Amino acid sequence: MEYQCSDCPRRCGALRTDVRGSGYCRAPALPHVIRATAHFGEEPCISGSRGAGTVFFTGCSLRCVFCQNHKISRAVSGIALSADALCDLMLHLQDTGVHNIELVTPTHYTRVIAEALSKAELSIPVVWNSSGYELPETLRLLDGLVQVYMPDLKYLHAGTSGRYSSAPDYPEAVVPAIDEMFRQRGNYRVDDQGILQSGVLIRHLILPGNIEESRDVIDLVADRFPKGSVLFSLMSQYTPMGSSKAFPELSRTVSSEENEALLHYLHQRGLDDGFWQEPSAAGTESIPSFDGTGLDFSRHPRNNDLGIHHGNDITIHIQNHQQEVES
Ligand code: SF4
Image (cartoon, rainbow, N blue to C red; front, side, top):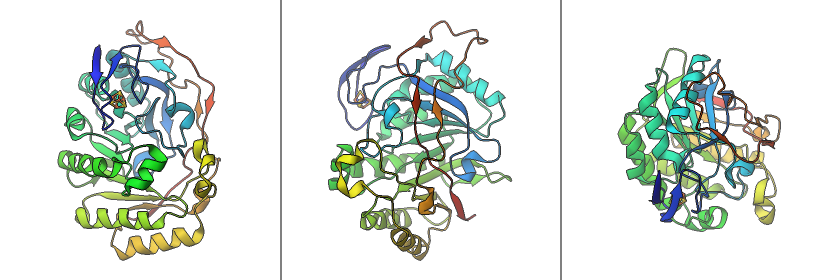
Protein backbone atom coordinates (compact mmCIF):
# COMPACT_ATOMS: atom_id res chain seq x y z
CA MET A 1 0.00 0.00 0.00
CA GLU A 2 1.23 3.49 -0.84
CA TYR A 3 -0.80 6.68 -0.79
CA GLN A 4 -0.79 10.36 0.08
CA CYS A 5 -2.73 10.61 3.29
CA SER A 6 -5.61 12.91 4.15
CA ASP A 7 -7.26 10.47 6.53
CA CYS A 8 -7.49 12.79 9.56
CA PRO A 9 -8.16 16.52 9.98
CA ARG A 10 -4.42 17.30 9.68
CA ARG A 11 -4.74 16.42 5.99
CA CYS A 12 -0.95 16.28 5.72
CA GLY A 13 -0.91 14.81 2.25
CA ALA A 14 2.13 12.86 3.47
CA LEU A 15 3.30 9.83 1.56
CA ARG A 16 2.64 6.64 3.50
CA THR A 17 3.90 3.21 2.49
CA ASP A 18 3.62 -0.08 4.36
CA VAL A 19 6.81 0.67 6.26
CA ARG A 20 7.29 4.44 6.09
CA GLY A 21 5.28 7.45 7.19
CA SER A 22 6.28 11.10 7.09
CA GLY A 23 3.07 12.75 8.28
CA TYR A 24 2.28 14.42 11.59
CA CYS A 25 1.33 11.01 13.03
CA ARG A 26 4.62 9.51 11.81
CA ALA A 27 2.76 6.32 10.99
CA PRO A 28 3.36 4.01 8.05
CA ALA A 29 0.27 2.59 6.38
CA LEU A 30 0.49 -0.74 8.24
CA PRO A 31 -0.88 -0.60 11.80
CA HIS A 32 1.74 -0.92 14.55
CA VAL A 33 0.62 -2.66 17.73
CA ILE A 34 2.43 -2.76 21.10
CA ARG A 35 -0.02 -4.73 23.28
CA ALA A 36 -3.13 -6.83 22.73
CA THR A 37 -4.73 -8.57 25.69
CA ALA A 38 -7.59 -8.42 28.20
CA HIS A 39 -7.76 -4.96 29.77
CA PHE A 40 -9.72 -3.92 32.87
CA GLY A 41 -9.07 -0.19 33.02
CA GLU A 42 -12.05 1.12 31.05
CA GLU A 43 -15.59 2.00 32.09
CA PRO A 44 -17.56 -0.96 33.56
CA CYS A 45 -19.70 -1.25 30.42
CA ILE A 46 -16.52 -1.83 28.38
CA SER A 47 -14.28 -3.83 30.73
CA GLY A 48 -17.02 -5.86 32.44
CA SER A 49 -15.86 -8.92 34.39
CA ARG A 50 -13.85 -10.57 31.62
CA GLY A 51 -12.06 -7.50 30.32
CA ALA A 52 -11.98 -5.69 27.01
CA GLY A 53 -9.86 -7.27 24.30
CA THR A 54 -7.71 -4.19 23.95
CA VAL A 55 -5.36 -3.56 21.05
CA PHE A 56 -2.98 -0.63 21.66
CA PHE A 57 -1.81 1.02 18.45
CA THR A 58 1.25 3.30 18.40
CA GLY A 59 1.70 6.74 16.90
CA CYS A 60 -1.07 9.36 17.03
CA SER A 61 -2.48 12.10 14.83
CA LEU A 62 -3.19 14.38 17.83
CA ARG A 63 -0.35 13.96 20.36
CA CYS A 64 -1.63 16.00 23.33
CA VAL A 65 1.08 17.35 25.64
CA PHE A 66 -0.53 15.57 28.61
CA CYS A 67 -0.99 12.20 26.91
CA GLN A 68 -0.91 9.29 29.35
CA ASN A 69 0.39 7.09 26.57
CA HIS A 70 3.02 9.56 25.41
CA LYS A 71 5.73 6.93 25.15
CA ILE A 72 3.77 5.06 22.52
CA SER A 73 1.86 7.95 20.95
CA ARG A 74 4.82 10.14 20.08
CA ALA A 75 6.62 7.53 18.06
CA VAL A 76 5.64 4.45 16.13
CA SER A 77 6.80 1.27 17.84
CA GLY A 78 5.70 -2.32 18.28
CA ILE A 79 4.83 -4.83 15.59
CA ALA A 80 3.59 -4.00 12.09
CA LEU A 81 0.53 -6.01 11.11
CA SER A 82 -1.02 -6.62 7.74
CA ALA A 83 -4.82 -6.69 7.52
CA ASP A 84 -4.69 -10.50 7.61
CA ALA A 85 -2.44 -10.52 10.68
CA LEU A 86 -4.60 -7.97 12.48
CA CYS A 87 -7.64 -10.09 11.62
CA ASP A 88 -5.93 -13.12 13.20
CA LEU A 89 -5.00 -11.11 16.28
CA MET A 90 -8.59 -9.97 16.84
CA LEU A 91 -9.96 -13.50 16.34
CA HIS A 92 -7.42 -14.81 18.84
CA LEU A 93 -8.42 -12.16 21.36
CA GLN A 94 -12.08 -13.02 20.83
CA ASP A 95 -11.28 -16.68 21.60
CA THR A 96 -9.91 -15.67 25.03
CA GLY A 97 -13.42 -14.75 26.17
CA VAL A 98 -13.17 -10.96 26.35
CA HIS A 99 -16.34 -8.87 26.06
CA ASN A 100 -15.29 -6.93 22.98
CA ILE A 101 -12.40 -5.93 20.74
CA GLU A 102 -11.28 -2.47 21.80
CA LEU A 103 -9.08 -0.56 19.35
CA VAL A 104 -7.12 2.21 21.13
CA THR A 105 -5.86 5.23 19.13
CA PRO A 106 -6.76 3.63 15.80
CA THR A 107 -7.58 6.67 13.65
CA HIS A 108 -4.38 6.90 11.61
CA TYR A 109 -4.68 3.21 10.69
CA THR A 110 -8.36 3.28 9.71
CA ARG A 111 -7.88 1.93 6.18
CA VAL A 112 -6.13 -1.30 7.17
CA ILE A 113 -8.26 -1.75 10.30
CA ALA A 114 -11.44 -1.53 8.20
CA GLU A 115 -10.06 -4.20 5.88
CA ALA A 116 -9.16 -6.42 8.85
CA LEU A 117 -12.58 -5.98 10.45
CA SER A 118 -14.39 -6.85 7.25
CA LYS A 119 -12.38 -10.11 7.10
CA ALA A 120 -12.73 -10.98 10.79
CA GLU A 121 -16.54 -11.04 11.04
CA LEU A 122 -16.29 -10.93 14.84
CA SER A 123 -19.17 -12.08 17.02
CA ILE A 124 -18.44 -9.58 19.83
CA PRO A 125 -18.68 -5.77 19.60
CA VAL A 126 -15.83 -3.71 18.21
CA VAL A 127 -15.05 -0.60 20.29
CA TRP A 128 -13.40 2.37 18.56
CA ASN A 129 -11.50 4.25 21.32
CA SER A 130 -10.32 7.44 19.65
CA SER A 131 -9.34 11.06 20.21
CA GLY A 132 -12.39 12.36 18.37
CA TYR A 133 -10.08 14.28 16.01
CA GLU A 134 -11.39 12.51 12.94
CA LEU A 135 -13.04 13.04 9.59
CA PRO A 136 -16.59 11.85 8.88
CA GLU A 137 -15.52 10.51 5.47
CA THR A 138 -12.82 8.37 7.10
CA LEU A 139 -15.24 7.15 9.78
CA ARG A 140 -17.64 6.09 7.05
CA LEU A 141 -15.13 3.33 6.14
CA LEU A 142 -16.15 1.76 9.48
CA ASP A 143 -19.90 1.89 8.96
CA GLY A 144 -21.28 -1.54 9.84
CA LEU A 145 -17.88 -2.73 11.14
CA VAL A 146 -17.70 -0.85 14.47
CA GLN A 147 -20.49 -1.27 17.01
CA VAL A 148 -19.31 1.03 19.81
CA TYR A 149 -17.68 4.42 19.37
CA MET A 150 -15.82 5.78 22.39
CA PRO A 151 -14.46 9.18 21.29
CA ASP A 152 -12.87 11.79 23.48
CA LEU A 153 -14.42 15.23 23.45
CA LYS A 154 -11.32 16.95 24.76
CA TYR A 155 -11.86 20.59 23.88
CA LEU A 156 -14.36 23.09 22.59
CA HIS A 157 -12.05 26.10 22.75
CA ALA A 158 -9.60 26.57 19.89
CA GLY A 159 -7.08 28.25 22.19
CA THR A 160 -6.85 25.18 24.40
CA SER A 161 -6.71 22.64 21.59
CA GLY A 162 -4.08 24.73 19.84
CA ARG A 163 -1.99 25.06 23.00
CA TYR A 164 -2.11 21.44 24.14
CA SER A 165 -2.60 19.49 20.90
CA SER A 166 -1.42 21.82 18.12
CA ALA A 167 -4.91 21.47 16.70
CA PRO A 168 -6.89 24.72 16.88
CA ASP A 169 -9.40 23.07 14.55
CA TYR A 170 -10.17 20.28 17.05
CA PRO A 171 -13.50 21.83 18.15
CA GLU A 172 -14.75 22.18 14.58
CA ALA A 173 -13.57 18.62 13.73
CA VAL A 174 -14.81 16.69 16.75
CA VAL A 175 -18.49 17.64 16.59
CA PRO A 176 -19.15 16.37 13.03
CA ALA A 177 -17.06 13.30 13.84
CA ILE A 178 -19.24 12.41 16.82
CA ASP A 179 -22.34 13.21 14.78
CA GLU A 180 -21.19 10.65 12.19
CA MET A 181 -20.59 8.07 14.92
CA PHE A 182 -24.09 8.64 16.27
CA ARG A 183 -25.55 8.50 12.76
CA GLN A 184 -24.01 5.07 12.33
CA ARG A 185 -24.98 3.53 15.68
CA GLY A 186 -27.96 5.47 17.05
CA ASN A 187 -29.07 5.17 20.68
CA TYR A 188 -26.80 3.14 22.92
CA ARG A 189 -27.71 -0.41 23.89
CA VAL A 190 -26.34 -2.64 26.67
CA ASP A 191 -26.85 -6.37 27.21
CA ASP A 192 -28.24 -7.99 30.35
CA GLN A 193 -24.76 -7.88 31.93
CA GLY A 194 -24.52 -4.14 31.37
CA ILE A 195 -21.94 -4.49 28.58
CA LEU A 196 -22.24 -1.91 25.84
CA GLN A 197 -23.24 -3.60 22.59
CA SER A 198 -23.84 -0.60 20.36
CA GLY A 199 -23.78 3.18 20.50
CA VAL A 200 -21.56 6.11 21.45
CA LEU A 201 -19.78 6.73 24.76
CA ILE A 202 -18.31 10.25 24.84
CA ARG A 203 -15.37 10.80 27.18
CA HIS A 204 -14.16 14.09 28.59
CA LEU A 205 -10.99 14.47 30.62
CA ILE A 206 -11.11 17.41 33.03
CA LEU A 207 -7.94 19.52 32.90
CA PRO A 208 -6.89 21.41 36.06
CA GLY A 209 -8.08 25.00 36.05
CA ASN A 210 -10.17 24.46 32.92
CA ILE A 211 -13.64 23.74 34.26
CA GLU A 212 -15.34 26.43 32.15
CA GLU A 213 -14.44 24.46 29.03
CA SER A 214 -15.65 21.27 30.73
CA ARG A 215 -18.97 23.00 31.40
CA ASP A 216 -19.18 23.87 27.70
CA VAL A 217 -18.55 20.22 26.82
CA ILE A 218 -21.34 19.12 29.16
CA ASP A 219 -23.63 21.75 27.65
CA LEU A 220 -22.88 20.59 24.12
CA VAL A 221 -23.59 16.93 24.87
CA ALA A 222 -26.75 17.76 26.85
CA ASP A 223 -28.06 20.08 24.13
CA ARG A 224 -27.11 17.96 21.13
CA PHE A 225 -28.07 14.44 22.18
CA PRO A 226 -31.49 13.53 23.61
CA LYS A 227 -31.53 11.95 27.05
CA GLY A 228 -30.85 8.24 26.81
CA SER A 229 -29.16 8.42 23.42
CA VAL A 230 -25.43 8.53 24.28
CA LEU A 231 -23.33 7.68 27.32
CA PHE A 232 -21.05 10.31 28.86
CA SER A 233 -17.92 9.69 30.92
CA LEU A 234 -16.50 12.54 33.00
CA MET A 235 -12.90 11.69 33.79
CA SER A 236 -10.94 13.16 36.70
CA GLN A 237 -7.82 11.05 36.41
CA TYR A 238 -5.60 13.74 34.88
CA THR A 239 -2.02 13.18 36.04
CA PRO A 240 0.87 15.49 35.04
CA MET A 241 3.13 13.59 32.68
CA GLY A 242 4.53 13.66 29.19
CA SER A 243 5.27 17.15 27.90
CA SER A 244 2.85 18.75 30.33
CA LYS A 245 5.79 19.80 32.52
CA ALA A 246 6.30 22.67 30.10
CA PHE A 247 2.84 24.01 31.00
CA PRO A 248 2.74 25.26 34.61
CA GLU A 249 -1.07 25.20 34.73
CA LEU A 250 -0.99 21.44 34.05
CA SER A 251 1.40 20.65 36.89
CA ARG A 252 -1.28 19.48 39.35
CA THR A 253 -4.17 17.03 39.43
CA VAL A 254 -7.83 18.08 39.36
CA SER A 255 -8.97 19.37 42.75
CA SER A 256 -11.93 17.96 44.70
CA GLU A 257 -13.63 21.35 44.37
CA GLU A 258 -13.30 21.33 40.58
CA ASN A 259 -14.54 17.77 40.40
CA GLU A 260 -17.53 18.39 42.64
CA ALA A 261 -18.50 21.53 40.75
CA LEU A 262 -18.54 19.61 37.48
CA LEU A 263 -20.39 16.64 38.96
CA HIS A 264 -23.02 19.05 40.22
CA TYR A 265 -23.26 20.62 36.77
CA LEU A 266 -23.45 17.19 35.12
CA HIS A 267 -26.52 16.32 37.19
CA GLN A 268 -27.96 19.80 36.74
CA ARG A 269 -27.83 19.31 32.96
CA GLY A 270 -29.37 15.83 33.24
CA LEU A 271 -26.44 13.83 31.90
CA ASP A 272 -27.20 10.85 34.10
CA ASP A 273 -26.36 8.03 31.69
CA GLY A 274 -22.70 7.42 32.16
CA PHE A 275 -19.73 7.47 34.47
CA TRP A 276 -17.59 9.70 36.65
CA GLN A 277 -14.41 9.43 38.67
CA GLU A 278 -12.99 10.63 41.95
CA PRO A 279 -9.84 12.76 41.60
CA SER A 280 -8.12 9.88 43.42
CA ALA A 281 -8.29 8.06 40.09
CA ALA A 282 -5.23 10.13 39.17
CA GLY A 283 -1.91 8.43 39.68
CA THR A 284 0.20 5.55 38.60
CA GLU A 285 -1.40 2.53 40.19
CA SER A 286 -2.63 0.83 37.08
CA ILE A 287 0.22 0.49 34.64
CA PRO A 288 0.01 -1.85 31.67
CA SER A 289 3.29 -3.07 30.39
CA PHE A 290 3.78 -2.10 26.76
CA ASP A 291 6.06 -5.00 26.06
CA GLY A 292 4.41 -6.86 23.23
CA THR A 293 2.04 -8.80 25.50
CA GLY A 294 -0.44 -10.74 23.38
CA LEU A 295 1.51 -10.42 20.18
CA ASP A 296 2.91 -13.94 19.98
CA PHE A 297 1.62 -15.14 16.66
CA SER A 298 3.74 -18.25 16.47
CA ARG A 299 0.73 -20.52 16.23
CA HIS A 300 -1.01 -18.42 13.63
CA PRO A 301 -0.59 -19.41 10.00
CA ARG A 302 -0.45 -15.95 8.46
CA ASN A 303 2.38 -14.43 10.44
CA ASN A 304 5.04 -14.19 7.75
CA ASP A 305 4.50 -10.51 7.16
CA LEU A 306 4.99 -9.48 10.78
CA GLY A 307 8.07 -7.46 11.54
CA ILE A 308 9.40 -6.47 14.96
CA HIS A 309 10.26 -2.79 15.07
CA HIS A 310 11.85 -0.71 17.77
CA GLY A 311 10.81 -0.10 21.35
CA ASN A 312 9.21 -2.80 23.47
CA ASP A 313 10.19 -1.68 26.95
CA ILE A 314 7.50 0.89 27.45
CA THR A 315 5.56 1.33 30.68
CA ILE A 316 2.80 3.86 30.95
CA HIS A 317 0.12 4.89 33.37
CA ILE A 318 -3.51 4.30 32.55
CA GLN A 319 -6.79 5.18 34.14
CA ASN A 320 -7.51 3.64 37.47
CA HIS A 321 -11.23 3.02 37.78
CA GLN A 322 -14.52 4.67 37.11
CA GLN A 323 -17.84 4.62 38.87
CA GLU A 324 -21.27 4.37 37.47
CA VAL A 325 -23.60 7.34 37.90
CA GLU A 326 -26.79 5.65 36.90
CA SER A 327 -27.82 3.02 34.44
S1 SF4 B 1 -3.41 10.21 9.47
FE1 SF4 B 1 -1.27 10.90 9.76
S2 SF4 B 1 -0.41 11.17 7.69
FE2 SF4 B 1 -2.66 11.03 7.50
S3 SF4 B 1 -3.37 13.16 7.46
FE3 SF4 B 1 -3.47 12.45 9.61
S4 SF4 B 1 -1.50 13.02 10.55
FE4 SF4 B 1 -1.26 13.16 8.29
